[in-house]
Length: 165
Image (cartoon, rainbow, N blue to C red; front, side):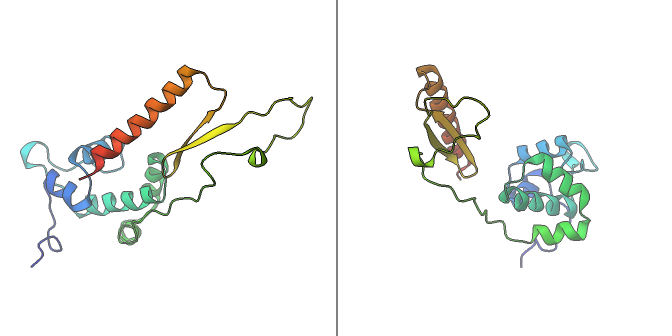
């Protein structure tokens, strides 16, 4: 028998596991106001069904690439029944489609002419760090800028490695 279906109270670790997030994330969401604070403090703190529903709804909204501020607005706007329906919907992200990873001269679109046109065209490399997050680096960027871009890419990779089970 699956006890998760009938459970109405969860300790922090149980809640995090049920929703597929870390306990740290739960505490952060409470701090940010995305989740209501639990009714008890200390070792007897328990979370209820609303917390599970909200956490699952947050995951669905994140899969839709909404930032936390927009998610907070949605959570405030929706009733508990609407949140429950949202929480039960598909969590699979639908990433936006992107063009090629490096732009060619024919793909660079110049801004509308408002004065004398520049005589040179700046070319950029497009780095897709993760789905939904890009970094554009000018071919003319100096070594410090390129080193910074590489460090950002390395930080993203470290973050992704920590998120893997």
